[in-house]
Image (cartoon, rainbow over all chains, first blue to last red; front, side):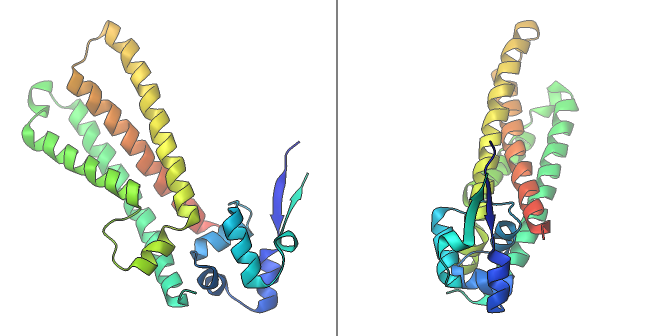
Length: 68
Length: 147
């Protein structure tokens, strides 16, 4: 059965009041990467997932989860 | 932490890069279609083969580095971040498969219509490098358009 990685990156970013570019600057990636992760086009590496969670001050599990 | 201005600059440069690579791929394929449709007696001039070779080396360096001509390490790192590296690897893999499949086709075809070593290499390199370049350009353009 297909597994889909879902995330609440946009919601957490909105809570902080940050733009995609601001989050990208904090994590050290391009705005395109933030955009493609938010839209579930790109699956981030474990390193990037941890950096995103740390920047947004949430756990990785709160930010990403797998739906079966 | 990076500067937001660097992120925005990298975003603009990334869009330009994908457009430039797309145009470069079209120019490359157009030039090679002219090469292959011209007379075998005139097409292998030093100037033509030299121009093709320089363009191939330039494209390979662009694909290997993601833009070796760019200045500014911070912006270049942002430009070649995780998504770009994944897109580049996928494009290089496509180039590999196109080269292998073309090799097999040429191998069979040469049993019926022999071709020279140079012709074979020219076809393989053109299709392999061109496929990787256009694939990277399309993947990057698509990534920039989402959202």
